Amino acid sequence: MQGFSLIHAGFLAAGFAVAVPVVIRDRVFCVVELFNRIGKPCFDEHDLELVVHVAEMAAKIIEVRLMLQGARKSEAA
Image (cartoon, rainbow, N blue to C red):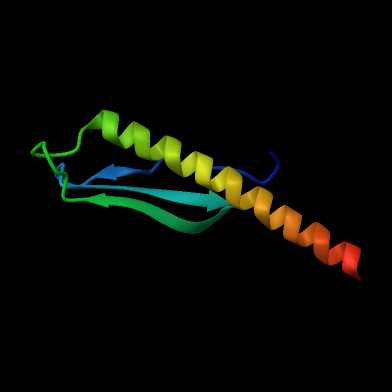
């Protein structure tokens, strides 16, 4: 998909938080963050990989939505 990218700059903050940016058209659209893990003392690399995957999927869905909105506006004009 043209214009889609994800900066794999997610981080584990001492294992207590995970954050991954959702980047659309070279701009940060939002950040997916997890805090205060329940059941385990901290987040690990597997958790970070999962959040990266969620962020990638969210970016794709949001970009398609933005493209559809643009197409609808063009048709209406």
